[in-house]
Structures are given as structure tokens and as C-alpha cells.
Image (tube, rainbow, N blue to C red; front, side, top):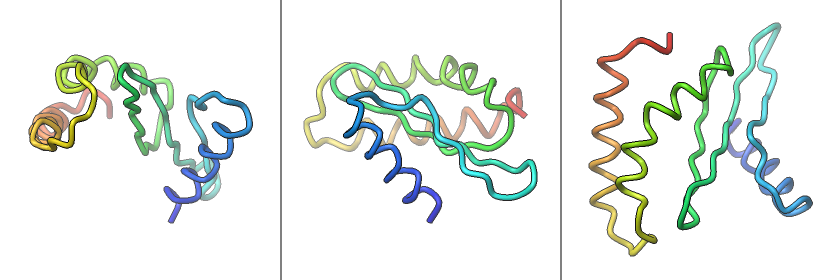
Length: 102
């Protein structure tokens, strides 16, 4: 439910200003926030990440996954989901073995 609310905010921001927000925060409780971060890539691809914790580390996370993403999104989307499914597996393995963002 929180993702749908944030997606609506992002869509309104894009529609009203013509730009994509870098992040949107929603307060869940006392000093407890969840963030939806946005990053635009070539060929009309966007990365949306739902995260909690230190927002300053989002750049480290994006820097770590950029090489994996750029390999898959170098061409416009053609309907073939196989590269994206492989990317999902690679990223899952990457984050399971690494706790450098904790």
C-alpha cells in the first residue's frame, strides 16, 4: 500500500513539474521513514527502489548495481524479459552475499 501511495505522488510530481523526483519519504512512525528513490537511465528506463535507513547510502547501492543494470538496459525494451530475470537473480545473489550497506 505504501508503494502505491508513493507511486501516485511520483506520478503527480512528474506530471506537474516534468521532472522525476530523486526520492520521496513517508513517515511510518517516530524516526521511522521509508523512501522510494528514483533514478533515470538511458532508453527510458527508470530504477525505483524502496528502502529504509540511511538515505546517504543510496548512491553507494546505485554505484554497485549500475554495471549490472547498464548491461541489460543498453538497448530499448523489446518485450524479452529473460535479461531482466537474469539481472534479478544476479542482484539477489549480490545483496545476499554482501552486507556492506547495513
